[in-house]
Amino acid sequence: MKVDVLLGLQWGDEGKGKVVDVLTPHYDIVARFQGGPNAGHTLEFEGKHYVLRSIPSGIFQHGQVNVIGNGVVLDPILFMEEATELEKSGVELKKILKISRKAHLIMPTHRRLDAANERLKGESKIGTTGKGIGPTYTDKVSRNGLRVGDIECDFEHKYHVAKQRHITLLNALGGDTNVDELEKQWMQGIDYLKQFDIIDSEFFINHQLAEGKSVLCEGAQGSMLDIDFGSYPFVTSSNTVCAGACAGLGVAPAKIGEVYGIFKAYCTRVGAGPFPTELFDATGAEIRRIGHEFGAVTGRERRCGWIDLVALRYTIMLNGVTQLIMMKSDVLDGFDTIKACDAYEVEGRITRDFPFSIEHGIKPVYTELPGWKTDMTQISCEEQFPKAFSDYIAFLEQKLGVPITIVSVGPDREQTIMRKRK
Ligand code: GDP
Ligand code: IMO
Ligand code: MG
Image 1 (cartoon, protein in one colour):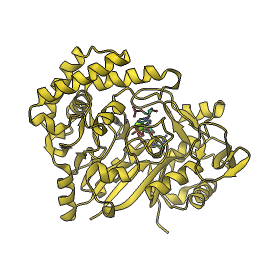
Image 2: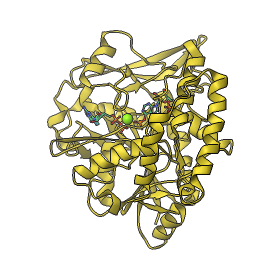
Image 3: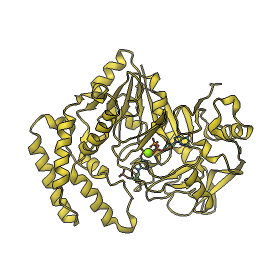
Image 4: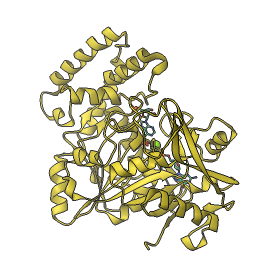
């Protein structure tokens, strides 16, 4: 069997959690391959609302195994918080969740280093989620990290060595070195983690594939936040693109099957960094209000703007997207006109290709389309689409070159329309 990958094509928060939950019944295994508790994946069903951070979004359907892969960075404190809440609400997490031995651990001092790095950057800070993501991946790459598997052998010593190194760094950076309280919680989190099935997830996944089982990989963040291809340095610290699924789970590239690329019918970004189609006017505020565009993790206001097809074509290319999923269509229901940026004007020249830098001098060139002025939340099949909405979809498919196979018209699991493949 092949591994299908579902990932965000914009700057995150596209609605990945919702769609992973919807698609889970078609799979045997759901796996996260990168990122950590910087993610906030929202699911709504039967009047309930959950935000998942480190745990995959396949835990609420029945019978699927969920895996936290080696490419993920895990904070034992936040994991314990998230998992105990889920257990309280009846999810038998210890039976269905497996965690890779090779996943790296976020330490309390990583959080402090994240804060210290941001403070030193001053005006040019990234606006991270403050969860210690950057410093943990930095330690991984500089070969100083602690992994889940380390818990099994001489852990106290390894922890102490890593912590002392961080304290030296924090002193040099003028950061906060007091982690006493956090450390207590962290050690409790480590004990809690030991109750889970800690596995060599690369073997598990490959053996399951060989036995004919199917796997859905759940991306976190979005391709425009990718460490290599995103709007660097205003990015996260992992490969959020499809290739990240190979490295983050130990799956060979030839095993990748469908690549689902998720995007909102408009665009948002949280944190600092360039955003060519950002709206600073009443329209941007209206999209934020209707779309409830506030961070699922940090509660921060999300910046809002029109859809950016230049950026989408770029991320579709990077990921080899085979199917597109359009989210939050209903948020644009009331607009008379909808704009789509199909090209950038850079120093008087029109380009449809994504440039090296989008920090300065980018002017979006918009195509205007008529709005559909229909309550999309009440629509349950493709045949009920208003003409202007079908035209918007046809326009996007023509500009992006990939079919839109799923359309989301509300936050609930049920508000999902599967389109017929032509
Ligand atoms: P993720 O990080 O990609 O999983 O996305 P988030 O959960 O951070 O943000 C998506 C938000 O949009 C959540 O609050 C979802 O409940 C909500 N949502 C998802 N799909 C739709 C939709 O089609 N319409 C509306 N109005 N809200 C949606
Ligand atoms: P999901 O999975 C939106 C952003 C942060 C910041 C930058 C770096 O819910 O889509 P980090 O803490 O990763 O070092 O922050 O990346 N960011 C996200 N934005 N959705 C996310 O995740 C994000 N995860 C990180 O706001 O700009
Ligand atoms: Mg999110």
